[in-house]
Length: 409
Image (cartoon, rainbow, N blue to C red; front, side, top):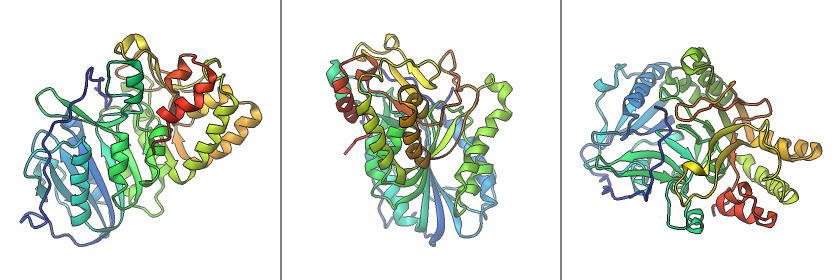
């Protein structure tokens, strides 16, 4: 099982009762201000609980190499009460089960809802002061895929919800947090040095664009990632360095699975870093290229174009009368643009995509066959709107992409 969740067919109910935390609660930790804090947000009320708690054991090991000005604040929502832990270089335990939480939320909360995320982040902001913050988000992920379905094709397109995480209330109701809600909440938190997603399909240019006002860097994979997740004992100390070497973080994550290649059938993990300060320029250049080639996105040969996910409409609900494909953005542009246009576009793309590591094939436990990764790739996905895939008139290209793509304001 990977961090990719099978799509829930039917409307997703957001019905979990949410409760806040009182500042005068006797359990509120009395923490001194840190220089650097990495918040780890773990939505584990799902089938990843065991894997994600093993990740915490790796964090305990990595924390031993931090200096005194750094700390890790871990929020976990599993099948026990949601709770928060502090880990630093003085933490003695290497087994998560032996740790005592700083705080247990008095009642269940939905960690994959807007209100649940807001409750947790406000609590952390109030009780764990720091000069800077980074954020690691661990769970399932669907990136820019729809997660709700309605009764008509038009309504389905208008009601697309892109999501992070899965929260299971134990009664068969699953919640997933839309990227728009995630962006809204994180925009109210102090600006983050980085957001790292240890979840499937989260490194798309659309997701990064939605989060561009929340963090300086988005680090993630455009494909599936095995349930073992990141090697936190090695990469966590690097996330505290200033300036942080995100290229090294990505390389270590990538190499971890190359070393285990026999277990993953010659497949590996694709990881990349997006610098959000460059995304507005990349958007402008890409939009102009869409206008120039309006009628060609659906007719250009996709042979040699890297795909990170491909779901034909034959496996989708009836309301999804279109294919879903995550293309590598650089690979797709190379297939459509002229040489001069591609050179201009890559200047903007290379400024925005700080580092990436590729693998021979995309790892997938869910989908067969796995996909080859071609040299003209950059580890960042882009999803063409359905109208482009379904050969609708070229004049609809920009309208469709702005409705379903990068623009969210």
